[in-house]
Structures are given as C-alpha cells and as structure tokens.
Image (cartoon, rainbow, N blue to C red; front, side):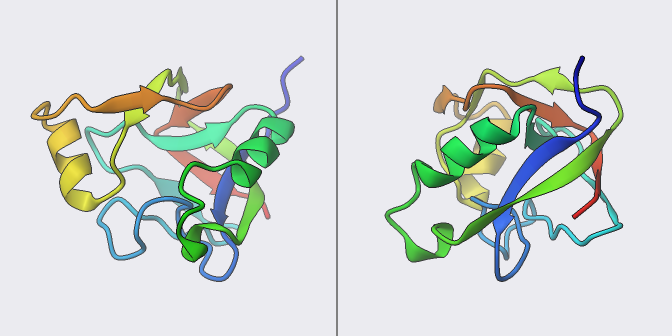
Length: 126
C-alpha cells in the first residue's frame, strides 16, 4: 500500500525548490500548511514516492558543486491532483534553459531520479 505522503527536497534555509534558483519563476517556497501549485505547462511539482530515494538523491545530488545546493531537507507533502511518473527532466537549471525546454526549443534532458512523481500541486505537511 502506498503512503499518502510524498517527499519534497528543498533548501534548508529558504525552503525554496532544491535546484532552481530562488529568483526563478519556476522556484517555489514550501511553507508548512500551504498549498503549492506548479506553473502551467511544466512537468509539475517534483516529488519522491519513497523517503529513502529522496535522502539518497539529496546526498548525491548532481548539483553539489555549488554550496547553496548542499544544505537540503526533506519535507512530507500530500499530492494534489493526478500524479505522473517522471522519467526525464531538463538538463539545465536556469530559467532560460527551463523556458527553452518547456517551449520545446531544447530537448537536453537527463534521467530523473528513481521514483520521481510530479503533481499539479502539493500540500506541505512539514
């Protein structure tokens, strides 16, 4: 049986999206008790189905070359809407790269972490 909770990795200090720059239109701030919704025409709010996978990814996250991506925490979230399995994501993390990816101008993608799911929104539990 699947847990009603999913797991979201965010920056500890800001509670912002783990990878995207906090100034990006794609960045979200995950505040306890709030509903957060993905931008239209994007993959959605990226979550992990299994906490151990979120922990593994946060320790071995491919963006560790930059200190701002090292201090991450894992939050429990409750999905809102129908989820979809994500198999690949944009290779870049800048707003421009994401814009090009979502506008089908660039297909530079990498495999997503194991057990990644995307939802239209989430309710932040922690």
